[in-house]
Length: 186
Picture 1 (cartoon, rainbow, N blue to C red):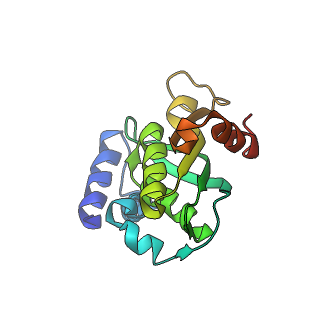
Picture 2 (cartoon, one colour):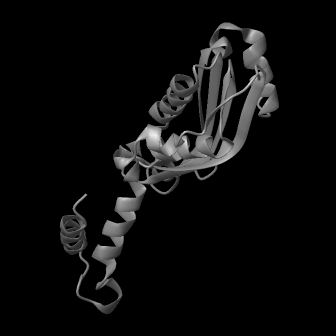
């Protein structure tokens, strides 16, 4: 991302909305916004293999492994406003497990892009599945969207829930029910 160009665009935006980008409080705002957007969209420049960083371990585990309440922050592609919430990731290992922090890093990799929650949920699930060759994967996300909260319908307490289930989480109702029960959704 060209931060200098983004700063110029922010300065123009400030002018368009009726602000004076030369006033004291706004002098450095274009550069701050450019740096913030570089961070918020760094997922476009991240590589899944580098994020995983060889933290896939051989294991005799074939049980369900769950990381709950992973904080997720992203930007809605429709209004360019944040959405945020929690992500629950579960999988049944076949012969490999993933370092637990890598589940959160996978969520960040795809979350730090301009997104919709539905796509984000599926991207996380497929990345875990593809990385591990897991028997099954389940991802549930619960997020609040500022585009609904501070504009439009103005519903501050609304939460959007999305899920993606793959493999045994999709094909076996008992496996799916166990996952939902363990994350507190059943």
